[in-house]
Each structure stands twice: as structure tokens, then as C-alpha cells.
Image (cartoon, rainbow, N blue to C red; front, side, top):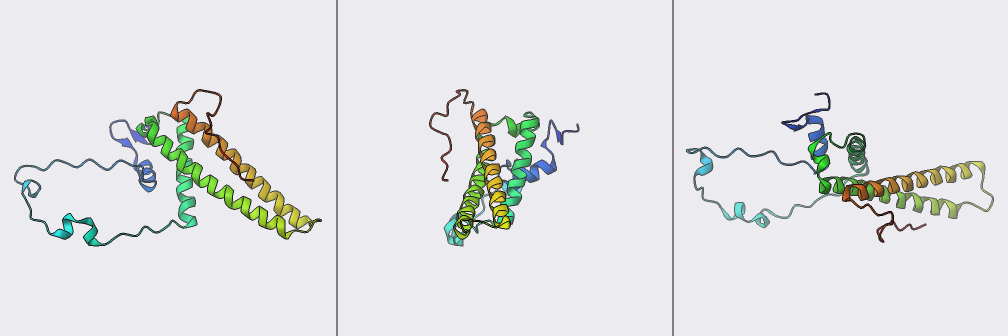
Length: 180
């Protein structure tokens, strides 16, 4: 098959890697223990093994901007694949999976929109009433970026509605609120 998957085995290594990086892959099934193997014997445990708090809390580090951008690129790849071929991989048929994938990308785009709007506001405050051509060009670039983010948000919102099975033309109060 040229779709990057074997129907019996699921997604290819590349797609599995993408799904794993996004935290959306299913864990590999564990083989049951055979009789006579260590898996069927009782093994005494210490408190550290049975009490996860004894090992100490694991602090989760926030992702860097580069890591967030890489994850976004991977999500966009999967979303584009879903739009082009909704039956490409079995996960595309799972509405919860697709909702999570698309809403994570939507959150990232919203975060970037908010940053761009804040940057535009600061730039606009620093520019005199009669901006230079360079200042106006910078504002125009930011305006184009803001519009691109807004278009992305609309597209992703419509995809979420499609995945969730919402058929009404109205939003039912779930549309985006804009701050700017």
C-alpha cells in the first residue's frame, strides 16, 4: 500500500512517530506472560515501587517555542492528511482523537494570534501619527499575520464542528471571542 500504512498493522512508523510526539498514539499491546515466566510469579515490592509519590514529584517543563512550533507542524500535517483522506489511518475515524488534535492546534494558533495582537498594539503605540514607510510596512506585515491566524482559527473551528457532528448553521454560542 502506498498510503503509509498496512491495514492490519495501523499507521506507518512515520505516522506512529508523529502521533507519539503529540501524545496521541496508542501504547503498543503487551504480550501476555507465558506460564513459568517471571510475569506470573508474585514479586515482593518495596514502598518506592508501589507508592509513586515516594519517587518524588516529576516537574513538567514547559515546551520551548521551537518545540511548540514542531508539534504544530506535525499537527498540521495530520490535519491536512485528514482533510485530504479521512480514511487514511484508523485514528482519523475516532472523533475524540480528531477533536483533541484539532483543538490543540487551535489553541496554539490562538496563542500566536494573541502574541501578534499584543506586538501590533505595542508597535502601534510606539509609532507617531505619521508613520514612516518602514513602520507602515511592519504594521501591514503584522496585520497580514493577524488575518492569517484568524483565518486558521475559522478553518479549525469548522473542522471541529465537522468532527463533532454539528450540522446547524449557527454556532450555538460556541464561536470565538476576539480581543482586538
